[in-house]
Image 1 (cartoon, rainbow, N blue to C red):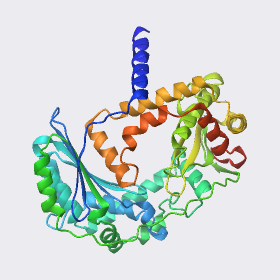
Image 2: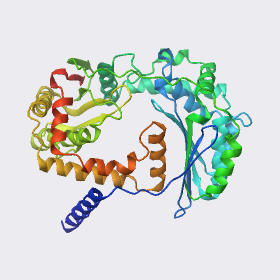
Image 3: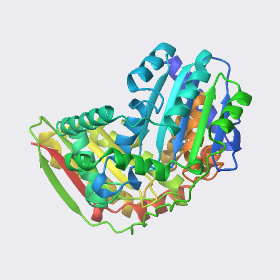
Image 4: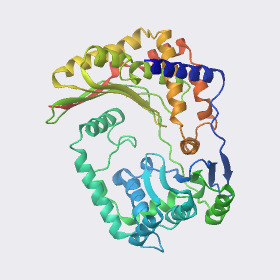
Length: 436
């Protein structure tokens, strides 16, 4: 008990301090080459570790609807397909011998290639990343293997109720063909050929759409020199950045039941929310935390889980995209409690949208919690530089991360109440239920 009191006092102190001044993350060294390529460096010699992440501003939202999954397949092949000078098997052996970890991932807006190693191998790790990014092997055998594994993953997804309800809910909110709702299918994967990967790569992998973030135990001077030699002479070809039309904030009710042989019910409920860079973002974040951001003490958690014992898991969540974000509530409950839980969810939303009865105590607790969660989330220099890189590449204000705690602390009770009335629409609630 004494330890918990000390911990709570420490958290409170941190929150109070952050209300007076901006959070000050470690300084990042930035450089932009003449061709637009960006380099972020954050040296930290405390541990003999090295990590570099190359972000490219392209992802699933950029691919043709008929080839959904293209960016995922490309990222996977960049990771496993070797280079123009090294076969995949030899490349794998090199990584093993040097204890270098390489990975490729693609999201909706960013593709990421990353390497990590001990600092004694940082030059070799960086060379690996550079070769994969600019000289991919496009190996035919690894391509077919990657597609086959992707298909098998899609088949396994049909047995994962959490995945089923999440995907169905996104389609219910955005529409079947919207970039932020599309999901690869066996047919779309069958259409993808290596030539499609090459075209996608050559179109979007331009220096002025790339940002290399490096953190750990290395020499900034040597990395700068290497980057200039590696990509400094490569020119950027102009491309037309897609614009995703902002969806109107018009939510119409929708209910869908997906029958599965399960012993529990999985529920997603919600509707459209904020678009990216909306001025109400910080008040909205606090409202969401008060509603369901904490599994035991939030309104949903305290009522549905703690007091009534109706749910194994219950929380609310939100994101923000250029088209408009998603507000959702997730519940995992007993089959016989499904209707009761849905009624309670709707009741909490109606109460917020009409009464907006957020209390000063709720707001204060949410501010402390979000600020502490945010600051303690950056527990290593690696996270600082990589988060900064992603946010900058997506167009966030340069000081967004630094000012986040201050912006959260500055939100007033009136602002949170206004956001509740403006953005919570129980009459437009969309629900998807997966269960027997």
